[in-house]
Length: 431
Image 1 (cartoon, rainbow, N blue to C red):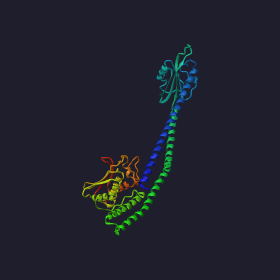
Image 2: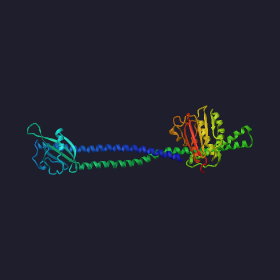
Image 3: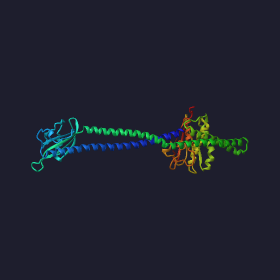
Image 4: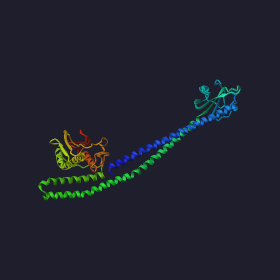
């Protein structure tokens, strides 16, 4: 599997796992939060119901009369151990104190004032260092027959056990969520691996096809090359046709290298190209390439213009740089509108650098696709540049040639639209 394929599959798997786990986290968090809210609300409701029952039972037990001062709680209505019942007079002063009450801060006068104003009060207070849920209700008398308030009852529920139960509930939800997410992560990894298996097999089938096709293309390419050699060697064509034979031989050689590159990209994309470096003149090389590509441009009703200095000496691989120029010009011809011109500009901005620019007047390359087009088998969606049914390998090979020479290649927009491919090559490229 090539490096690109592995990167694509790894990136797809990571994104799929991240999206799946993100959705699961949101789902588990939502369920956990809803469970916590409902569970805690239920616990609070149970406390409030217990207080309501205790208070109403205690008031009914009084039968409209306050208990005698300091009367023992043993003579009052029974209450659970975690429940407190206080009897207050109309001014809020303590009348009777159950024997088991030992919480400082009770009775709570603020609760008495609120009950006096509204008829009842329910709040949570801190008494004796513990939290207490406190219900305050008025006690009405029966002596005058008018039901006037003769005192107040404060029923308190110590929340120690309630808080422990709430904490246990929250911890249980948290532990269950962690275990669920861990299980979901494992399942996600397994499921995404299985889901990507058909895609992986498709990539592998494509690579096998490319490798097999490149292998099969070697023989007809070699036959064309050898036939052209015979025609040239035996002088079987007229002198006027010999340049064409030379072009056939050159293009056969380029086709042979392209087939080799196709096989290389299909099998070992990360392996660098091996260069045969020598001194060369890039300006002269550009003139040769333009001459060779003119018949193709004329067939498409296009023009190729060259702008270069007299000389642009550098060290590099002649065959590879020829291949680079042909790829860029062929790509530009493929996307230039009929009747327009393609420009090849070779520059020498300083003593250490040469530049190559190929400009067309086509549809251009969207900014978001300016890196994608240099990947093997790249295709641009929705009216992108690829329209000729090409292999999608040319620009990928061009980038590898430039990288092998220690240079850079990029694409931008031209002043009149279209695309501008720019190559920067060091004159003394590292060996």
